[in-house]
Image 1 (tube, rainbow, N blue to C red):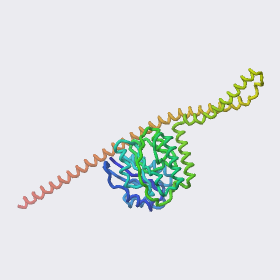
Image 2 (image 1 turned 90 degrees about the vertical axis):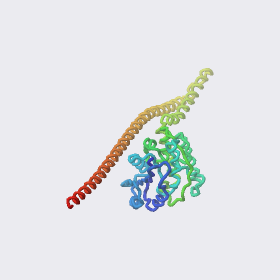
Image 3 (image 1 turned 90 degrees about the horizontal axis):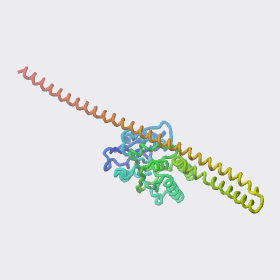
Image 4 (image 1 turned 180 degrees about the vertical axis):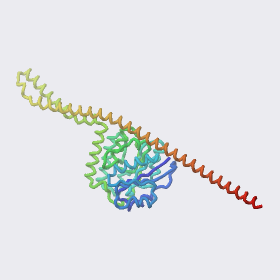
Length: 360
């Protein structure tokens, strides 16, 4: 089992040595453990520090492209070099490296495709009461939108099976944490969580400029992704208020009209209800129609995602086959070289014995 621990970094030259010192060197059930650093356009020499620390894989963006892009770059690279299991952690030393073993166990047992480290935000001392409350609300919203149970949706301490990494494609640029959970739920992947204890912060978060900015962007991401994967339901919920209001106004006019016919009163008393009600019904119907069209488009997108998944899987299988063939060739060439050296040594011995015989 080949495990790669990927660390997206942006100007983490000071904290990266602390992170690397805490990472495990070996784990039960893991035959090969390596580290990947994704340098997202750092200007403080993060890549050079990673190289001095003995990091096996380093990928560098020429300029800062954001956490979500760096995360996806890491997944793609890990898959191409043959990782069976991928763990994502941060370069600011927030997450404990010594708990990676517990994080990957549900995947090794075959109980989950994705495992998220639950920071147990209620007990995190350096979280403010407001942040704890918002974390809980956000996690509940993500759980409802994805159909999964994730108590800490914003946690970046995660483990992914090869199958899960193949199926996930991050399309947002702000953060991958919420999107990957919603994608996993909609694609039928099993999401589990394990409790973890976080380290004391070494610096302020660069992702969260302010609490309300994070809430706004996170809420927008959740609503956008829910509409992306459930368009018919989303547009139907938007259409219902218009449809019900239109039906109510037209119904009221119908009742008044019938009453006027029976009592001989004025039938045009609530004629404005016909105009407004008809307009609301039309708007509601158009919104519902947009939902139908979006649902058709969503079905086509799902088919394209399946095609892309199979294409990526085939490409990676081909790379693995080429890699194994190359290793066999190198092993065979090494065996031939060793045999040639042995034969050469024997030839030297024969030549020496012949020389001694001729000397005699």
